Length: 351
DNA sequence: TAGGCGTGGTC
DNA sequence: TGACCAAGCCT
Image (cartoon, rainbow, N blue to C red; front, side):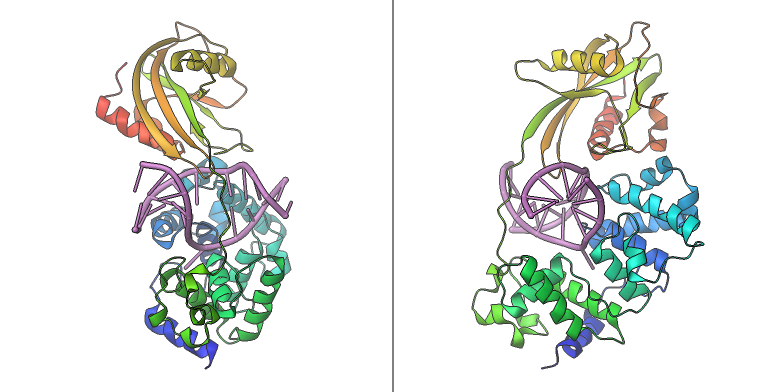
C-alpha cells in the first residue's frame, strides 16, 4: 500500500475550497497559518477575509498601528499571535527588502513563527519538502505507527517517518492532506476508520481501540474568579484603558476593575480596584449586568456597574480614553466586554 | 519544560 | 453543563 498516493488521492476528492488555499501568495499562507494555530478553520475564514480586505499586502500590515491590527484580530484570541505577526511584518519590510524569506531557518527566526508554521509556509508557499507536525498529524501518525506516548522520542520518530513519506513534488498538498485527514476522519473521538484511506496500515486500528492513541494528558482544573468592573461616566462619555502589551489580552481596551478578594463585596472590590488603577473614588450606581466568560486557563463572572466621577480626574499609568458608546467599534475589546456591550445595547446604556 | 495564552463548538 | 477539543509559540 502506497501511503502518500492514498493520502493524496483522498485529498483530491475531499479537500475543502478555502480562501487561503491554492493561492500562491506567501503572505496569505503565513497569515492563515498563524490564524489557524489552535483555531478551527470555520472560525478563521471570516477573520482572514476581513483582514485581507483591510491589509491587502504585508506592507499594509507593517504600516498599520498595533491598535489597528489588534482591531482586526479582536475576538480571535491568543493576541500575541497578532502582535508577533505585526512585529514580523516590520522585520520583513526593514531587513528582508519586503520579501518573505523562503529559507526555513530565516523564516523560523521571525517572531511568532515556530517549527509548525515555518514548515507549513515553506511547503505550501515555496514547495519545499518539509513535513509539518501539528496536533492532527501527531494523532494520525501516533495511530498509524501505534505509538501511544508522544514525547520527545516519538516526536523525532514522527519527523523521520514523514520526511521519508512526504511527496517531494507536492509537499504542501501532502501536509494539508494529513491535517485534513486528522480533522475530518482520524478525529480524537469516534474516528471514522472505515473511511480512512490508510486504514490497512494503521497499527492503532489493528489494536482494536484506535481512540486510545495517543495517550491523553491530564489537564489541571482551572480556577474561577468573581470580577467587578466599572462603566465610569463623565456626562455622555465613559472611561476605558488599554491593557499592558505584556499582560493577558495585551493591547486590548477594557473597563477599570478587577478580582473580588475574599471577604469583599462586589462594590467594595470595585471601589478598591478603581482607586488602585485610577486614584479616584467614584459613586457606584446600579449593576448593568453579569457575564460569564471562560478563558484558556481560568473562568470569570464579570459584574459591570455604572459609576460616576464627582468631578475627579482618573490618574492612570496606562493609555486611556473617554469615549461615547457609538465609538466602541473603533477600539479592540476582549470577548467578555463584547458580551457586556450586548447587555448595554439592550439596556439603553442609561445610568 | 511545563505552564501561560482566547475563543467557540461539541457532547 | 462542565470538560474537552482545534493547523502552536514563547518563556
